[in-house]
Image 1 (tube, rainbow, N blue to C red):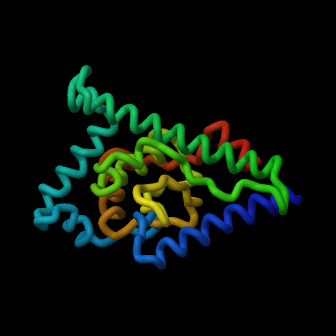
Image 2: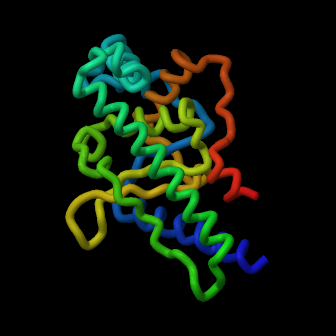
Length: 209
């Protein structure tokens, strides 16, 4: 019971940090919001407001994450980078969940892991930190890697330069309007009539048990 309370405290701490992060004005992507956005939100996928072109860019970009070699060629450096980034995100996710499980097993009210920030090369990729492409990795992590209990977020580091990779419980996170429009479009195009399954990684199963 005591260990479970410690885990609850740790999760509560994540949520409190996330709320402070939102209140600071650096609001990350809203995630897993059950309600659907309006068609106007999808129309804003393109900065120019061109609905069809915006949809085409979104679908093409996610297709690149699904099959980099088909999009860029078998020996393309870009394709290899995307594959590496997907592996890095899965590795970071599994490491985070393992730390949560370790905290539950070995921690107590006085001694426990309090900082769950993950160091990863992903925090150095401008396409994810400054650009908008991290939404495709987040979405891929759910549907293809089947990691759904937590959501990866890139945020500006407090008190230091650079970015941090953190994970937020999925129930405490939701997409922004623009990102929800992207998600809705991708779900309809690539995963229509499919159900998002629960996280079946070994670390996640251990953490939930």
